Length: 175
Image (cartoon, rainbow, N blue to C red; front, side, top):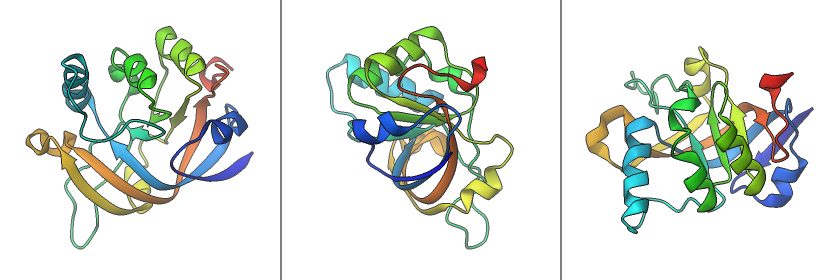
């Protein structure tokens, strides 16, 4: 089923989404890949403040290629999500409600999605150039020294994703 949502995510929205749904997201999402996740996780362990509030937000596992011409951002395809699995349960406990990436997640992440009423979305790998056209604004907000892995605040319009794992643990990768 095709649905349109706006960020931030709420439990009411999350509970309406089912594995396999085609979804279009409009609003703010944040990017973070491997190195940014490690740095955020270390920040959490130190009891320090993160560069953005995880509560009710979505993290897109993406590091764009350099922008060309007058484009807002370069190719913006998803990266493999399992590389963030060791950090994800703690971030979900702190209020993160959604992640966008590609590929399967481990059992600890799925259990944490259920426990924290959160959701995992899949973006189509190999479609980064098309996905970048749905990003209407991009701001570096933290860890600029990480280059393309810096954390960005993105404003997206009708950003296409599939619900890969819903808040009940239903999983498109197990069908």
